[in-house]
Length: 368
Image (tube, rainbow, N blue to C red; front, side):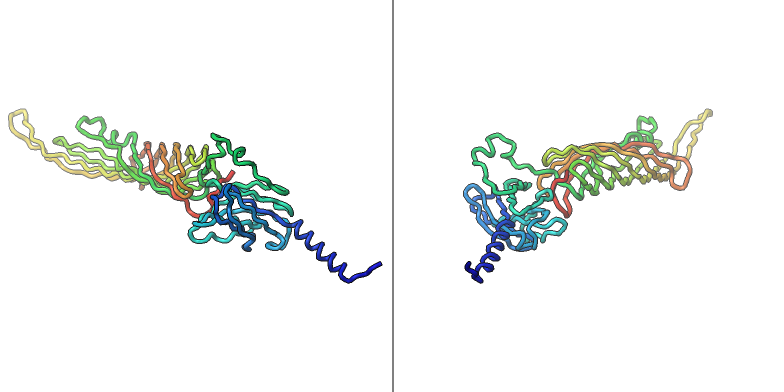
């Protein structure tokens, strides 16, 4: 029997090589532009580089044991699209990925993936929303002629409506139901004007693709009622401030989201009325002329209170951080006079809004 000191060393080396091979993984990038530089980062460590071939594919071996100190991990995957390269980031679940480089756009792959010793991470970067297929073992891509038949929905990229916080600003065409007409009181010489342009600002948080919450401020157009026929001149002006708190339920379809709105509103309204009665001359029964003196009076009314609103509309996410939207809301206002007295209000605004939303911070990935 031959006893060589080289045998234990060889055995140890072979065991290490087998263990390293068994814990090796692969990132397979698909549908990148041909010739595109591909980088892979694992746990803030540069794990490999490659270049997309003529089919847009690139295969990069990685090793979790070397990068993270363990052969298996539950991982989140991110894709950074930069000017001249695409970077795939594999990060252990529960940890924060490094911020993207300046000029790079971070795109998240939704989900948490159990990456094993022989996993292949097939990352599709060909659409605005990257996706990933986790294979336990090797992966052979289908032929290009078999993968996306002409006319298939998979041949077209889909961009989902964003979730998270979005701030908005909108012009608002508003109309009030009763206030202007009631101020005229049926006088044919009085002109009511309850329509006009206002504005709205606020924020919407989409917790999921179909459920959201909104808080905002609406300044409707000023309500007026005027009479200029002698002898009575009349001018009523009403200004209203509305704070809105509401929930939204939506039906998402790619970048389009149709939603309904249900919630509460708090109003503060100020109504100022000026009446001027001109001097009038009349003839008495005996034929003499009598002058009746006129006068001016002003009335001031403030109201506030809570009521309810409902409505609906739609938004289109033109890009990940930018959307246009339109909605129609019916906003009831109900309140008592400030300081007591007469003059309660019970009315309704209709508001047709058109504006833009800008997404603020966070991830733009779709949430189920």
